[in-house]
Image (cartoon, rainbow, N blue to C red; front, side, top):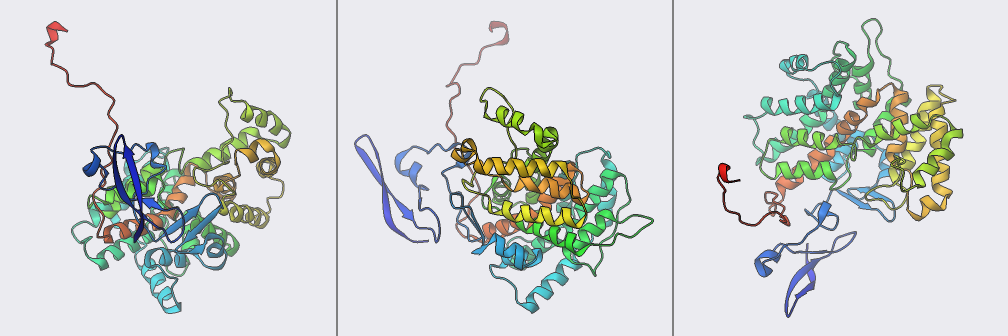
Length: 430
């Protein structure tokens, strides 16, 4: 990170200059780390929409062009040509693995996918109707108690071991969460199945009949994981980095990320999008809802359209749309009314001037809910699957932050607009 240019800040008759750094791709940044020291003032940036909180080499998004890169590789190429564990290796190590490296990595993930027996008992404390994300927060947090004294985050090998344990154990926890949620016994992971197939097996195997993994469905699940693996400095990733900046246990940091992801404005959007499609119900009712969406006085909003970052078509949505069709065709779901509503809404969004002017293109949440429902998951599990996939991104971001010699504990400033100094008044005089 080198600086060739300077930015000049002028307030009244005083001026200061600050270095400007050039990104390998994307906008330049002004380094204002010394702003308060030099000027006695802070910046105000609600939601951090114009603030780079860190330097990273992991993921790049160009929202205007609809670009998403993992370590320089386009998301569509990764989803189509590589599998999720190869993507995990890429995010953690910076390069795609060769044949030998991939083999060792897969073996290590398989070796760590079991859980301490006491974690099984942990689930008895949750009601069956507890939201699966609340369970995930609790059980992932509990892992920090199992891997605390044996881990040193200042040691590179311990950091990598923590990342592999997380990637390996989260699918087992997610499957156990699902099984507890539906009142079924847990199913142990198998060493002879790939990552996505093993997860499906743990979720859907029954007592009387062993689940036979469909390779097309497993491949679709693998793509969904890859599409959700990382997404730059979003709310949950920033939460993981902020928690990690204090030196907290990585399992606890990931638990905080899961808690943040739970929000409807973040990971819960796919569940909301599916609920909206089901509320519309049939294609003939779409004009009514389009009219409501355009009415600024109507609280109704079309879910699954537009994105905080993407001002073009979400590149993940294109792959998700294709995957949705593949899953429905494989499962013989030909006349899904929800999909029919989704397709017509997409057509309208891409041709109607109202949506085009506001750049309200369909995003990944628009299609993923339909696909996950077709795979057999209830909507309450959608965000759990999101968390499963995003664990690798959180882990890679946490690891990168810990290894950054410039990282400091996160401490945002504020614009205080409360009361100034007041005198205490005795109760009887108030």
